[in-house]
Each structure stands twice: as C-alpha cells, then as structure tokens.
Length: 175
Image: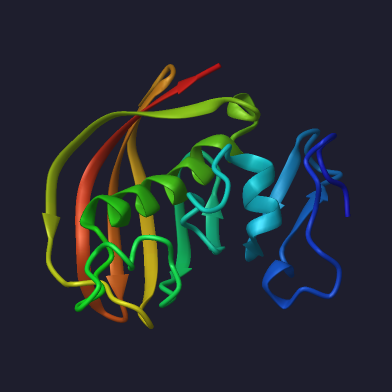
C-alpha cells in the first residue's frame, strides 16, 4: 500500500479501513480505492474529531461524487445539549456531514490534494426526518458544476431509504 507523504494510513487489522490508497501503474497519480475509513479520510480532509462527521467512504469518484456513512452514537458530543430529554442531531451538523463527505470527493482529485474546503453557499436546504442515536446516515454528494476553485454539488443524507436532509452545497477550495 502506498500512502502520500505525511498522510498516515489505515490501521492494520482494522475492518473499517480495508480500503486503501494504491499506486496504479497505468496512471502516474495515486488512486483512492473505496471503501476506506477515518485514517484515509483524515489524510484527505482537514477535519478532526470531535468535528469529523464521516466514519467511512463507501464509493468515490474523485472530483465528481461520493457516498459516505456516519453512525450516530448516543455519546456524540452534541447530544447532552441538543436535547437532553430528546436527543436529536442538529440539522446544521447533518449538512456539515454531507459537506465533509463532499470534501473527500473534491480533495481526492489530484489537483486539490492538501487544500482546504470552505463553504461558499448552502441553497435549497430541507430537513425531512429527525436524526437520532442509533441511526446510520448515508451521505451522498454529487458535483454538478466545477469551475476553477468553486464546485457546486447536490447533497443528501439518508437513514435507510428515508431522506433526512438535502441541500445544494457550494464549496471554495483554498490554500
């Protein structure tokens, strides 16, 4: 397994980190192979616990689309205050989780490696279902337009087959 310099790599014997970064002889750049877990995610995006909201990447087309997953745990840091008697994941964090999955797709593109993704816009945002402890969020983001350092994508978070949230996300990729 070849890992970009300073990127770290999957923990050995970690079922969640079975994906890998491989050196593909047919192309000069490193190719990411999904599925992969947090170690590889952290080699791509700057987010770190407790604010890293993506556990695993299931599908990836660098610069184009991504499908990720986040297990919502009863001990997640926001539940003691939102809300103690009825724990609910804040909607803005659901959108952030979608954006972080999207950031993996954007920063997996060779020309964006090592850069920082910034929100530039959130449009047509809708919340359709409460997200609570025990739920598993499937995070999808597909980029519909990329012009220079600006990308626009359609994002969704699902619990099973139920839509939990959706939004059009605009990201600026900076240094």
